[in-house]
Image 1: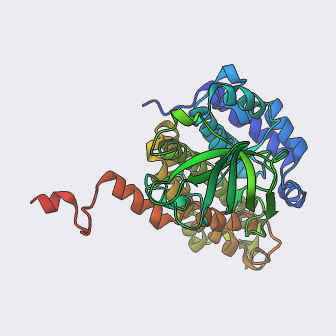
Image 2: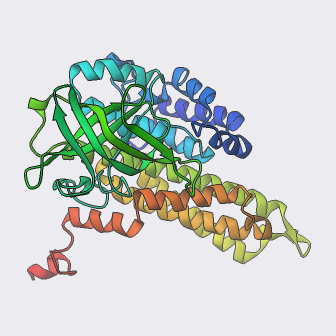
Image 3: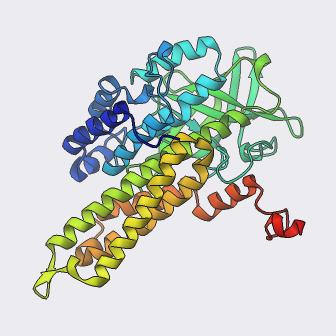
Length: 402
């Protein structure tokens, strides 16, 4: 494994960091999240058209750059440093890969070039309170129970003479209030023969669609409740080509890559919070000396630095091998939570005020664990997949064999 970044990856990092330093400070972030879309549309168009961020991992035939998860992780790390409010994660990490993996040639040709150009934003809408289960981060996706499993709840899809109709709701949809395209997971048929499939819902033409932006802890990561009442939809992929098990495999594959990207984003946020804290303790004086010179403060900052660097190493490895995404995400979220908590405390009285920028990072840490964690479940599922423990027994397999 060559862990060094390529010249192209370094250029993505440098260009994006310079741009966000000018256009995405704490004041600009607070202003952007209070708009109807929840992000700066002008900045998003610039990121899409000049830097091509939404199409980084899309094939060149669809207008993308043909890069891999590593390039997207580098971009998201810089986005995390600035807490950039944007539909990048939902569009580029969740929706676009699913369309590329499951969609028909006609669907890919119609949708992916528009996504790559920044003309169309998209997101994944799944039933339940968190997308983590649907993406296979904290549980198994094969049974379809996360989507209702054919029982009451979830989203029900019914075929008709004029296409599919969806009925149900999804409670926590990233950028669900503003996305132009929704990929909705719904189950077809009644229990026990139901299977979960993905459907395309175009927000500009769909009937029976209601979207409400939720009041969330982290305003930079907007979520919405999506209600579907006999909503017109299009099946993603051809009906005769959809596997009996549904899109579980595609969702799990996307989940691994998304975890790696999220880990890099969390590392970027943690590193930025740490850098801001170091600058503060170097300038803030108490008893005639900078508080950063006190040994207790040095130790706490050193511990945070080690956590961030360890999480960065795990995130970079996961970008190279997304199979390690779950564990990398767990480590990165833990580092972000602890580092941001230390940032608030080491900023003293001003750090405890709700308006201080340290709280922007702390709220990102808390919200990400609610959406994609918690950390202990990420680690538990990774251990289960690796076969570290036998069912019903917490002893390692080696000891059981003996």
